Length: 350
Image 1 (cartoon, rainbow, N blue to C red):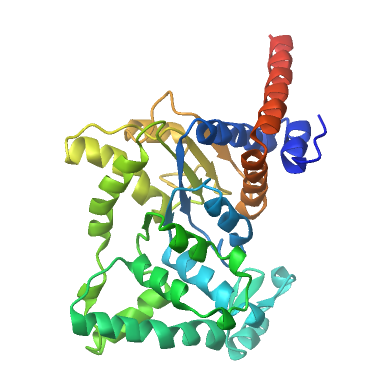
Image 2: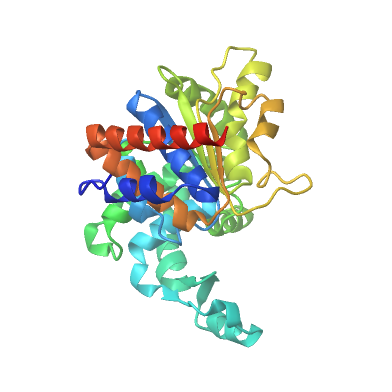
């Protein structure tokens, strides 16, 4: 099956046969089916994926038309920006599992904020961006402007001169999303460093809380974005992690149906990459079938769960999808052969 132009797709087709690797392979194939047929894909990104440099693979995927909308945490939004302007200031700690409390106290004194095995530099990231973003908020307060949280970051990242870049701009997913004007929601944006900074300026009466549109307004706007994206072959849902980044946007379908009392096409695809196990009342670890009972998915929705580390699985899938986009005929041939082999294997097991 070797194909020099599609090494990652060929590797997945040849090696990913069982367990989570099979789920990864099948989710990848179905993602490509959906895109190839003209469908769209909406991403929900939780966890510290921006600090983990997901932009290396996500930014090219956005530019290639493999991602059509985003729901991200406030932390992922701002940390994509930090990787662009403060990349050289990051420090890595590969032996973090063996750290003591004293080790982390030393990191604090170095004005670093550890995120698992890496860390964000306080002064080069938070404080440097603060000098740009706070005046934007104050101008909006003075002018009576109101915008969504991500719109301030879109304006900011597009206005930064290239001389200020430390990270590779081709690897900044926020920059790619801003240039593509992707629809976005940032549910619970208050729960982020800049959410806290904004709250402090509201407390000091330096900024009005009204300059940022609310989460309710995000959902009201998502109704229209979803209807637009769901035209044609529909829109799929690709979720990293759990929590509000996933639960907020996926609810748009039942809300359109029950609250607006309008027709809503179901999500056309669902895949979640998560290391959360099914537990009592856990959204992050809930199986896709549970979402059927909430009318978010249907029994006909292609559903996949990959119980693994998203920093391993997501870049692999995205790179394979980029190969598919660049060489669709070769990709279709590999996938067709792989599916035929799987079909034979299943026939033997009956």
